[in-house]
Length: 152
Image (cartoon, rainbow, N blue to C red; front, top):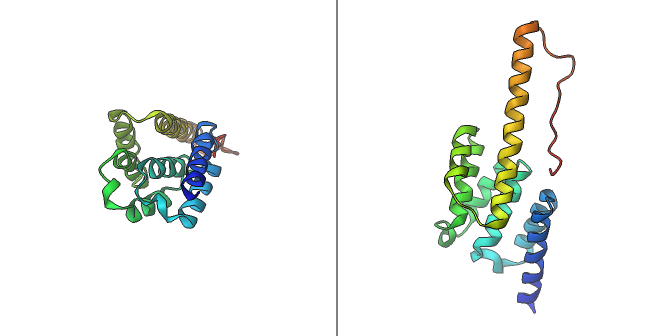
């Protein structure tokens, strides 16, 4: 019975990730991790959890997920997702983009990583826009055009 509940909830997490509801997916993963200890060795669960944390910009939580994850799964796709997360946690955007492009992720993971990278590209353009505006007009914008990720 516990296995069936676990599989159903895992499918729900995958469905939330596919639908772009990353905040809900990370919350469900957190609840599942607290309630059920049987997820300890599920690589897919940890990958989806970390990817959804990246999508909602919870880099600190992603780091703690990596630290508490069992060592048996740290040489799988989870390590590749952490490689991107680690670069983001250190605010090294270029290295994160390189790490994301250097790895082939599975289907749901690839979409999430691509979403995270696209949000970062938009933020870089926004920061460059503000910088150039400030240089040319010698004063900051009266309002900062803010990009809010629609999936966060």
